[in-house]
Image 1 (cartoon, rainbow, N blue to C red):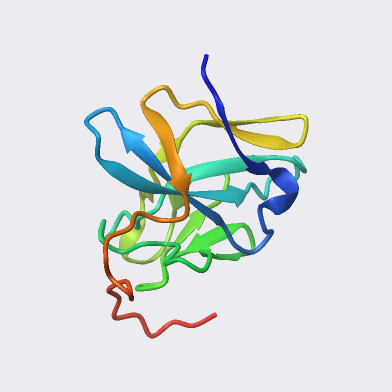
Image 2: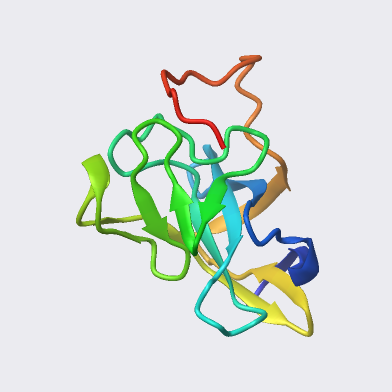
Length: 141
């Protein structure tokens, strides 16, 4: 199994995310966020594709970290909240949906990309040429 080191677990904030870009087999790039998994496991980290299930063009991390509150990733547009460990949303416009997972593993305090369907492209988001992501959100954190 090929794996790529993404970050140290200690570099993944408790109330935020680490943003990176992966390349799909067809060559397209997708943003992914790393978040601490709030299940009491200590070094547990999860990776999710960087979009809300309600509106796939709505990024959870818009370049300055996703809002993570009480073990949930908060969609900045409508406030839907996704469990950091399972990706499940039980409220708001995205209720009854799951974030799309990307496989990662923690080994000796480091997080590695282990998903065979993608390869690591680079740290940060996809360079889409926009200075500001589109959002009509009124939520601030």
